[in-house]
Length: 169
Length: 328
Image 1 (tube, rainbow over the protein chains, first blue to last red):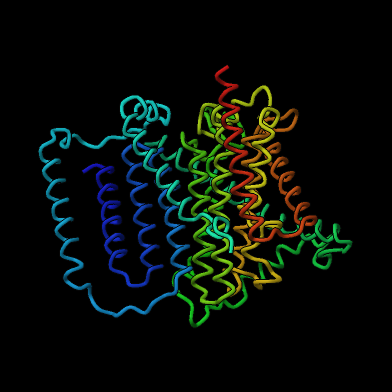
Image 2 (cartoon, rainbow over the protein chains, first blue to last red):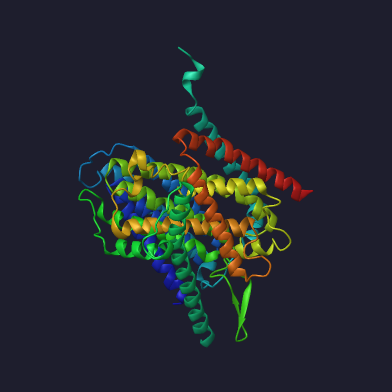
């Protein structure tokens, strides 16, 4: 086992454990903190795989912006006292089925792809070459995703508009 | 193997020097701020400990370390204990990509005068600065006090709003330098500093930077006269000290970033490069202290309006104009 694979397995276990803790916490702020640790681990994993740009973006967008908003909302909410019992069966059955399917598909892909046998090597991608690859090969997908974001933005503006201005009393 | 060990020792030495300089400068920035602020308000400021109160930072740090570390009974203990460290650590780590000279030659070895030249250096700075919010927000939440929680929520809202304009104001710089690396950005300013071609960017960057450091006129998360001390209200001893160090280290880092992105970094005539960087950092810090002594605090709605309705659109328009100029 090389140093890279050791680092990979450490990071992978940190991600899995912290995500596992995050979804089982009853205290929402604690759950958010574990999820931040998990995102941080994913960012390190990207860095390890030679994508510093993706690592930085993961921290900026997921750990730094989205989770701050989550935390913001959690703090604004009234904290309800939830019953201290394990999740009811109708909640975790669909989740378990979905994760089982996901694991099965991932295992199939990994075993079917010959590249999965290649040893991990030290490598770093330049941000410029990454951008070129993304916008030359996958421009259509990016445009579709940005259109989706634009629709979400318009939706938020619509929901958040000042109703009083439109129908004065 | 030998070169590996030499590289490692070199890295430790560089880290030690930079860390020592930053903490020392942070301590004396506090002194400079108290002194200058006092003069601006026609007072004397600290003048008991040593000549001109020069020993005051040392006396203060001894006081902080020896004071009792109180954790409120109703606080969320672990988060409460860790939050100040998050603020201080993220501020200190940001300096890792700031270059303070080109490179030295010692015993035939080329030594780059930067701790780590990441090819995504600018994004690394952003990542850390966006993580700094957690110290404020979680510290305020974990204290389990109304004022601290209000301060934490305000901090989160403010920092996430100004993060955006801070990032957008630097995109023209990246377009001009064609790199995210801070070393390359300084290299690109060999002929003229970017402040001459990007004055609007500089203004947006500076305003957002002051807002990020939560200082007057953007000190709503602390707001002494309405929230007590806001997010760090329940903290005492060295944990309060860590918030304090975090703030002053943050000022230095923002000064260094302003220098790297707009003022030509370590470039300058006659004096050695690290001295130039230091002078530029001190200059930016003094301007921030001056602003603190001059301006009143913004109201919450004014703060949000300035961020979202003035700075973000101005930064976006600036990007479009810069792009048009580069294409022509």
